[in-house]
Length: 287
Image (cartoon, rainbow, N blue to C red; front, side, top):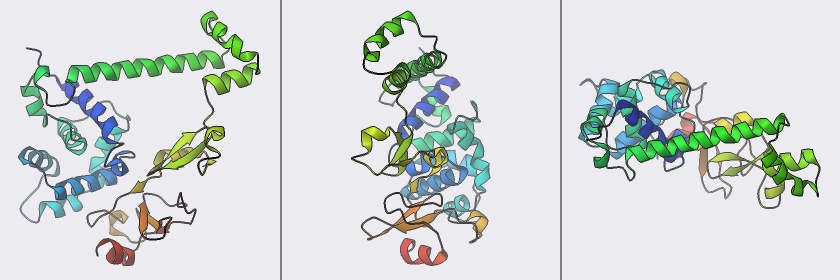
């Protein structure tokens, strides 16, 4: 019997995260800050969870009987979720099992928690793909990324192998070496467009006639997101209304407000976003 290991659990969760961060809760997971992770815990708790998930959250949040569990999550110090945030962002390679269990809950990885995962074997996993196949797929992706990066560096150093050089020569008949290599093999994504709830880097020539294109800003590309808010969202840092964590603006059809995790311009209307206020929260979110 091929038993699961702690590395299997960690790798399986990371692969599941890559899927989950483009799914229903992408607004929380694409930029998994401690505050966003706490908000997602609140949202999922409110939606309901099973006995094992209660066990996971109880162990992490250390619930007591002094108030409701939802209130205790809401008052929980967001910075205590930073190790989870760092792990998901790839800043750390390891984290505590209790943190892995919370991540498994947030991305809906099964089987969870860790003790349940360890009690089975690879042939008994309830995931669509057995864990060993998931791990192999992840390793193939990593190897391909490394291979592409090495090829790119070789082009920059002009140390092109004969095999690649022969492939490039016919294309260079109609373009210069520098332009051909740069734009045919490695397109220059120097602009970005808004896609649903985040920006994506693009080639200007490919989208200039079909999308609203703006100059590439790496910080905005990496961090600016449209988010879903509810009555459990943390709107202010440490409860201070002078330190908002949410900004808002009217949608393109002007029928509703839309909410974002950073200040800036509304990506569709180009209007300056406003910091959230208690008035807006009470009138439009808590209604």
